[in-house]
Image (cartoon, rainbow, N blue to C red; front, side, top):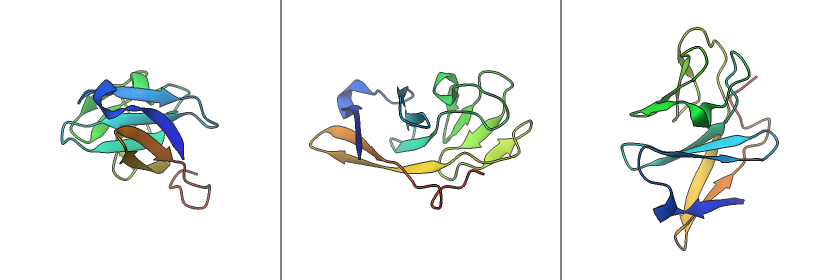
Length: 108
């Protein structure tokens, strides 16, 4: 379990990056839910936490590939492979990410 920040410090529509191996992006989506995915786009080496959040999707800032935050699946080209998703919890007002193992993740 990795602490990210206090819930109040991650406004809706914003993201935070965790310097884990591999890096993880945490998003506070417009639906109020928290989502975590591997931070690196599977199309090319770009940080998804620097991308544009719309609904439950994030658009890569490099070539506009989009990923569904709920599943990690690519929504459009040029990405073809999913990113791994991670479970997120809030305990005592602090956001925590529970990194998925390689077997649990959806990315190749």
